[in-house]
Length: 377
Image 1 (cartoon, one colour):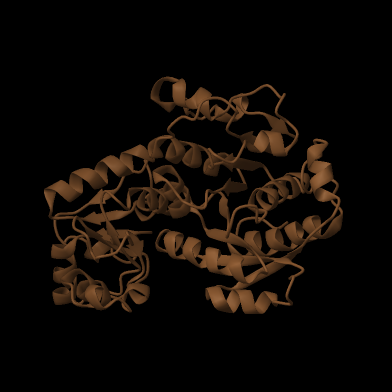
Image 2: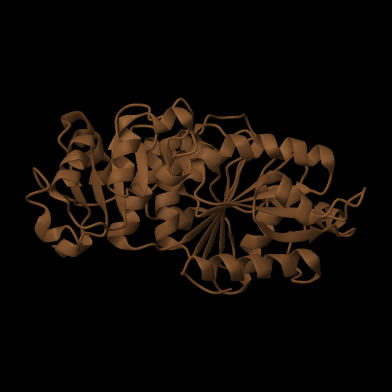
């Protein structure tokens, strides 16, 4: 049996919310501590790795004046704002005038909740948080998205995965863009045997289990799950969620190549990502397009950073691009004239371990993997 201190604490009076929460916990193998009220929770209040409360319990918390602590999630069964933000920190949402006027946000502020989560919309994020609180974070999840078409997001995602695998880290590269042409083609591995998304979609129960790695194409320590060139199929959010759960438990790093207009499945990946990198060419029109992408995905991201592709035709600086998008600048990607030719010849991006793309990949991995406390590149 798990130690008490390793089990999340649920104090939920709303029966409907409790049913949803218990189903969510069971889906990620989490056995929570259940108490009827916060008076009964005093003994484990400080030790629980994560506490999930509903509005009734939050009100009781303020009355009982329980000690302030981190890792507290306030659960809501209603829309907590007029926006699409389903999992956001109270401090960030406080800038929203309509959110400030709601009772749920007043309670979140009163108990110093880290996040307010609306169910079922925030299920993916909360499932990941419950799993990490119980089993510990096993993997860093990095999403990569283009600020405009052809920005180089797929190239950077592939190079990051290849660089990490070359350094000895078990890596999973996920192609979450069904209209991207297939990352197996970009990596020159379209002839490799192994499962693609259509194989998982067609299999019973999504075809996802702990043995998924055995079925995927391999490049050393890199496992690849890509689309093929067949008929476009619908990827259910629960299928991608299962893949991410299995991938996080079996990898040091999961890299997800994301579409610029996220569907329901892509939003699952956005919710799960520790950080999402937006690749933006240093061009005025590209920055304008990227601003729309950022506005669309920001509500689903824990952290957004920008990688700027240079040189700029009109001298626009990388720092100016980052400032215009109000994002931290993670690095710059210098165009390599030989890259397009190499890819056409089936040479995977970053596989030569030379040039600015490889150098940038090493730098990004060193920052992100160290920052998130998993492994060093």
